[in-house]
Length: 594
Image (cartoon, rainbow, N blue to C red; front, side, top):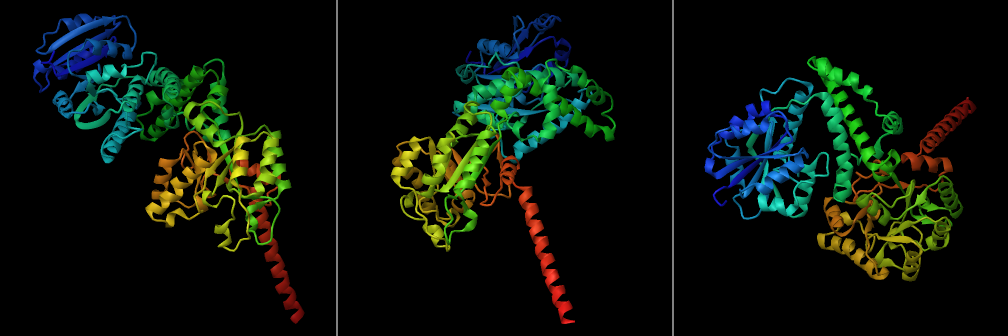
């Protein structure tokens, strides 16, 4: 066993003719034949593959294992268990090896720490011309160009053990091997487990293999699409860290007028295969024409996407279940001061108590539920725990008026919320606003904070002194960010998970420090998209500023779209009216002068 350095494991099913083309390159490697073996696992083939393989005369070791058809993952597991090499290289049966492939893989494992090595894959010159060949050529080039430009494999989007990948056999066995329950993507799921075990991933571009791709557009769309969609849901449930990176994570971002026809197809009790007849025909027959090629690629991608979603819906249980698990849209409303208007206070910051209660009543009557940041964290991690129509209300600075005019209203309607506290000024006044000319407002005391925390209101950090973090030294910045978390955690007796940037100001250094200290971070920038989805960076959650004079129509627009076109229209009308009055005044004076 010690003499064999590498075991090449190949799972195959009814590919005898393909193996006639791919085997010669594997048997002619510039690597000592006594140092490697080839383990074929014939997964229920009926075309004489096993007999053909056993008849081969090879210089290296070659073993053939037959099993009842159980899938590629189970076949690879079986081959690896019986492999004798210290390293295992997984190849598909349609792979033509470059002459130095085995040597490159073994050399990459020369270090002491276990690594998972990925070589390069390109399409073989003899691959039949088709729209899929054209699409894969583009994909392979873009993929490896990106990897090389980024200096190798990086978590999360390039940690993927596809064919032409190797790792120590003991590492593979310790991971549990491929998950045989998955209908597809078992290689990616294994990669996630290896990554969580601490295994490093390494790209070896010179370990080149060539794929004889012969799949039909119909198989690519209908069969692969369905199995990949089902596997995606399963992987997200098994590996929560994959959820925000999933192809399902952007479902909530689709505009309603785009998602409506998609929903009709996905919610249909009968799978409308006939819908794909024309796209598949176009992809197969007309792709050679340059004018048709780009639309054909879009048709191919759209058809595959629809079928993937159909598979995901099936695995999730229903369209509604998949929406609850992946497609939630979260508006975050931002308030500062809720209470009576006071002379000297910046007018854009104060929402009257009556207006605030009307807004909360409007939300409650339309089925919205006020949630807390911890619920959003749980949903991002697990896909559970959110109501059908969530909204997150946030209050900056922690003015004492909140305890009298806002928080009792939220409790009355059963709404959660988050209040961001300036921990170095608890029970004092808003000195940062006073420095800019604002009137003085008192801030919540420690007793009030603890009381409302017990009533279901969550508290987050807002710095120790409300300083502009971008102007501070690294040490000062850390004291503001980490110190405010520790202050508030001590006050509450529980961990603090969320942070809001004071003045909405941040840069790369600030964000890096915040990411290390908090699970969620909120910003205030009305110039960027304001809805939050599963794919939204948890350290860049967008908020919608609620304005003091917002009508319920304005409020509804902000909630749905993040801005109020009604307010914009009113502003234009006011400007037009002022210009008209100015013109009348000037013209009137001119007439009077005559």
